[in-house]
Structure formats: structure tokens, C-alpha cells
Length: 496
Image (cartoon, rainbow, N blue to C red):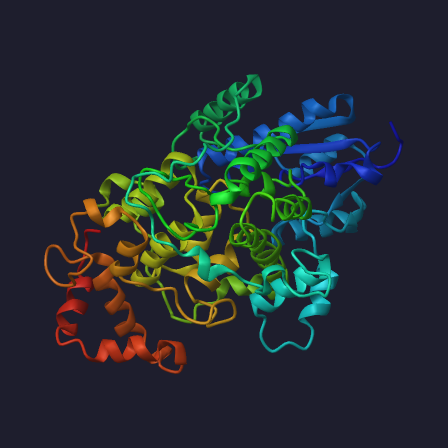
């Protein structure tokens, strides 16, 4: 093994594109920080995934890896007793720690991250002198830069850059899409030891996780991630696009890739994932499925990462709609049994039982509910980052503060993603078995999303009237003859 400085990897930098290549002969250092594990109320299965992934990598690397269990990262590096190098980390707090350690000589060099296709330097150049940062512009430039789904003349394959309009079909009448099942990992001795260690930490009050323990559902090693990707591309990508925005209560997986965990643990190289998907068209998967998947990885995921760094820590304080309601106890504790609305109960149950629901449930059920009820955006961002198994500090700010809650006033989204029960009824099967009626806004059967939508508009009308995309909804608001009744009812609502 080389006598060069060891490579210190965080728990979201575990793929071969981080520790292979030019670093293939370096010692790898992994630190399990007990203080980091207990810093927030993380989902129990999220803690399991991170610890498993680190220990599995250490086992795979054998003598090349040094795994240190310590009270903190500083303590772990002190026990190592040698300077290290590391990659740019994935949060502002970790970046400050690494910079402090560099000043102290503990970190010799901070390498550019290899977890994203576009470098921070290239994004800064792209963003320079732009008045607005439109994701669609960024996505098209990403396609051009990396030559993805392009004709020889540089135009998009199929003649359109974005096929989102083809991916909004309503769910089928049956309870399931009936597509092949996704990859499922088999637990092993490392899983059993991680579970025992987490039980002990909880018993001693070192961690206070939310959610329930359960079988590990997501890939958390190199081989598992490769198998999960291949299974998706081989059996599920072809049906991914059409019902991408639909929801089925009994089919949480539908045709979704379920690759966000291995991607966000750094186990998959995103550009490799995109290239692999691109090769499936035109021989196997339709263009709307391939393009929609590419847009999620090369467009949205990269966009969210770069906005996190470009907008800086102050972005977390954005609150354009002046929302300040404390997250209710049933929300924070994932007590889905306290919820009556079928769509909301299904989504919260998914978070409780597996730390995961797909993007439309996050945006149009959980996020929509929080937006209507005025939950504090910073607290909501922290909740999404800790209660979801694929949540990390960089993932959630632009997704929640920007896209979901419109708290940034329009940097990420051009209008609030607020919708009434009619949208949920159209795009899910939840309303068929719900105690509430999506077409009713007053009375015992009043849908909390339908009535909540109008109450939200009434509360925020002064802050939204200048947005031309909200002109039609606000005109509808002014035509409601029972608006005062609806607003009073929702102000006093205790049951959802």
C-alpha cells in the first residue's frame, strides 16, 4: 500500500469513483461518529443504511481500510494520528469542519467531489451573469455538455428536450401497475451487527430515531447498487415514464427506480447511470421513460446539489410566505394512525415504515399539506432531510424551501405547488376509500386539501397577487361565496 496520506471518506462518498482510479492504492479511512448519529432524530432505517454501507465498504477493502468508531470526526482523526486528504463534503457544516481541519494541518488536501457530473467551478461559470436560474436551461446545457440523448446535429433525440407532458397519465384502475419487482438486497451478518449496535445506542439514549426498524430495502454496497441499477434498466425503465406522476396506495414502488439511496450514498456514478439508461433507447425503453429518468439524474439532482452551494447557508432562512406553524407532534413522530385523509395517511405510513415515498407523494401530498398549513419551512426541511432514507443536507433545501414551499419567492419554482383534492383524486386512488370528499370544502366530509387550498390562497393573497401564474386561482378565490366559512373551518381544524 502507498505511503501517501490516507483518503478520509464520509458516509456518502462510498463508491469506486471516490476511492478508485488515482486513489486506488491509498488507505481509506472511515469514521463512525456517535455524535453525528445522535445529532438529529434520524429515521432508524437511514442510520442502518449509512452504517451498513460504511462497514460493508470497509469489509470489501480489507487491509486497505481503517474503520474508526469514535465520539466525533475530530476524535477519530486524532486517533488515526496522521494527516489525511478528503473530497469536498456534502453539507455546509461538514465543509466548515474540513476547512478547520485543513487549517490545523489534519487535512492536507480537499479534492473536488466526484459524486456529480458537473463541477462547482463549471456551475459557477454557467450561473454567472444570469438573472434567473431556470432548471430547464440548466438541464438542456447538461445534455449538450455531456452529449446525452442528442442527434448528430446537436438537437435532442425525438425533437423535444422535455417529454414531461407524456409522463402525467392517471393511475390505472387496478391497485398495482403489475410491473416486475425492484431489486431487494439480502441482509447479512453486517446488517445484524448494525441492528444490534443501533439497539444499544438507543437503549443508552445516544440516539432517538423516528420510524420503525425493518428489513433493509435499498442497495447499500457497490454490488447491490449495480444489481439494483441493472434490474431497473432491464425490467422497469420501459414503464417508468407514463405513470411517473401517479400514486397508488397499495403499490408504493410502481415503476420508480428506487436508486436515490445508492446514488446519495455515493455508490453510483451519476453519469454512468445516465449513459446506461441512454443505451436502452431505442432498442428497449421508450423515449419518454428514458428522457424522464435522465432529467431526474442529470437535470434535477445536479441542479439541487449546485443550488445548495450556490445559494449558501442563508437560503435556509428564506420564508417568503411568512410561514411559522410548528410541525405537529403526529407529523414529527410519524404517527400515521392519527391521520384520517387516506392520501396523507398513506404517505406518512410510508415514511414511518420505510423512510421513503416517491417524489409526487413528497411534493403533492406531504409538501402540499405543509404548504397549506403554513409549517415553518426550515423545520420542514430538517424533517425531510432526517426522516427520509435518501435525505442529506444538500438534498432538501431547494426541494423543500424552493420547490415545495415556495419559501424562496420563486428562485426554484415559478408558483406555489398548492393543489386541492381534485388533483389528488385525479392522480391517485386514495380518494376512493377516504372519509373525506375531494369535492366538498365545508362540513364534516370537507377534504382538508380542498378546503385547505382555498384557505392557503386567502392567507397568502397579498404575497401572491403579483405572480401572473396565480391570477386565475386568485380570481376563483374571490368568487367563493362561502370563503369566510371555509377559512374559519380550516383555522380551527384539528383532524386531518
